[in-house]
Image (cartoon, rainbow over all chains, first blue to last red; front, side):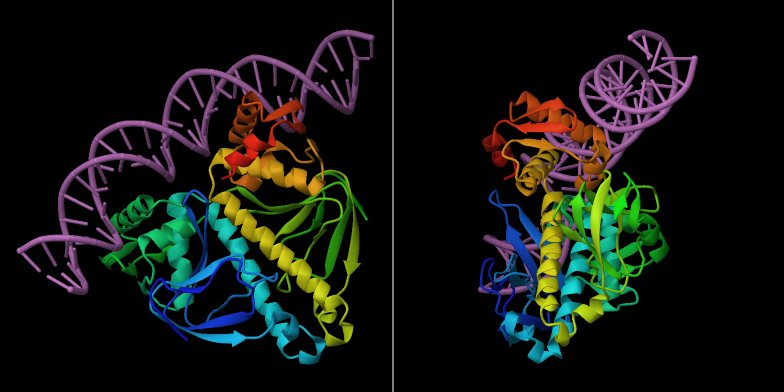
Length: 189
Length: 189
DNA sequence: CGACGCCTTGATAAATGTCAAACGTCGTGG
DNA sequence: CCACGACGTTTGACATTTATCAAGGCGTCG
């Protein structure tokens, strides 16, 4: 199924009936707070699976960051966990464990300082994209800021700062070249 | 099994072979960063279950916050997930889902401001302790600070601030009376 | 060309951290 | 029983970090 940029894939509190795999593009999960602040729970890149919910309803909504294609597996999660379907259950467990680890790493991110958060974000993205040195950012500064718990101005400043330190280069605002991983890795503590 | 205050129940990277249920006292999961900063993943109160790990090894270590008694269920997680043991698997799933939700709530906490984090922490604790208005804190200011991603000084200041606003009272430093939940709930946004 | 969205930069304000000192509590030992 | 010391907590003065507000630049698409 295809989704246009910023289109909702599912909404917060929707019944959790399907799981999804990104084919192309990128997806974010988020929730909006009463006062307008927005929390981004995670970004999902091609090949990654999202939409798992522990309970009956989604805790986050999911939106296309860019135009995106996703595979939709509509299966009641409870059915998949039945012993009869003993091939699927372990895979669900693995996916769930991955989500938990991701959330824990996110917590780990948020206790750090601003430069550390940005550096960690870049390294993590580069790792997942399997790009040796050049990363194409699918998401806007606002998305990054809401994921890192910073403002867009701070994210922008940290990037310029990293550029001045020759750790990265910014040919365009959405394209980032990792010039010196050692500097980034030293930053993330 | 009994553990003395600050005793390790298991260490980070230990093989994940058992799960645990708190009988009395309190337990924290944490990891220490290279530069000495400490992240607390969660606190567990009597009745709550901890020690679930998605993978083969623990991502956090677990320590007794106070003298504590815990039930230890030594069972290979993989075994418990076998279809043959079809009574345990759904329960494990529920516990895992609870952990995921807890981690997501923790992320939600960390994107807030200091007064919001402290207020949320107090309300959450009161809810889990099922105390109508008086909460006995098992953990030190340092534990709270490391959980909330703040310094002990900031935690202390936020508490005095809440006390001055008549939202809480502090008969002793480890005992907190919720005087005005409305003030606290307004704070957490 | 012009308008709009997105990003960057600067000046300033607010929040939080750091350092230092004082206070209280509690347990220990005289 | 009291005095002392260790530890945890609170408070204050100050430094640093990050947010806020405002302006300007840059690219894209009509």
